[in-house]
Length: 413
Image 1: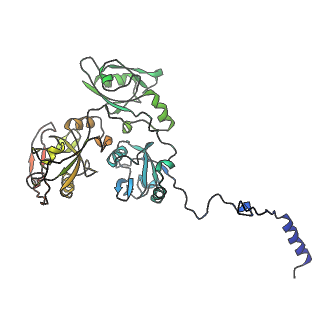
Image 2: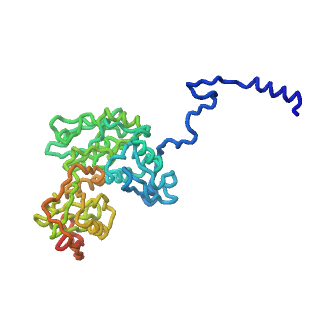
Image 3: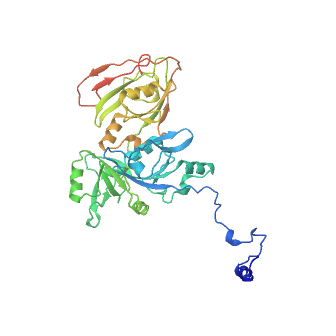
């Protein structure tokens, strides 16, 4: 039996309790129980922003790969205790953004090179695998969760090759307010710079692969004087600079528009004939060290018909960059392709151009630009034959052979 005093306290408590009338439209008689989210629902995908600096070995501590069941670029082989690991990047993360640029829908080869071209520091935006798969299940674009992205309409820096045709480069430079590294270009009508695509009033970012944002006017003048008969300029329209600054993005060659440069990569698809592909792959010394070059093309065979030219440099096999691979590993990639192979190549002149400015042409690779399929071939189920020959020669030009290591397919590859 409860005491009278206890019963009285209970009645007083009931009086203090706020009562809410039932509202059938709301479907609940106590608004205090209304929740903004279902506590059992999965959290919304959230992208993560990470800044990495290269370690002592010169790497960021991870690799990228494409997966069959996922679009875009997937983080792979994160080194335990490495730079990427320490900032929270994990195997399976989806890479969405590099240095403020949305890269999810770009070519894989190009995205890998954007990371490499970032120098010692790179900013990334990634999304964990479960979050990415939830976006896909909801038919949502990764763009929907990115707070800051450079707009598509924002002009990209232009990479321009300016040749002295006997009248100079056709531009003069001014320094705004005497600030170090802030140079604007005055372009002459009909001059070499204008023909090369340099807009008047453009902001100068790089000269022949070297950043000039810390240069004095004297240093810049000396750099231009030592450029010889041609100079490569990275410039940005003045109206675009504020957009980059608002997004916290430093305009660099990784964003460059190369439509004004006369060198393009070629994407060649070869179907092997009974006589083979009809080319030799040779490892040769070149301006950047060692490279893989395509030689001795047989007339009428798939290599020549596809658009391959003598002296082209091999950059990728079946979508995989070969620039860091050994010759034997590259040969194995081609052998494992069976009777068809896709090659990304660039001309001898184009290779020299990009080597001189210190970037890989894969940085600007566009699969749809030059995609040539060899059709003047016969299909064959013949097996590949391999033979190796080593030969030494001394020369200073990479158009000639320093080291030859060839693989033959039936007669030649």
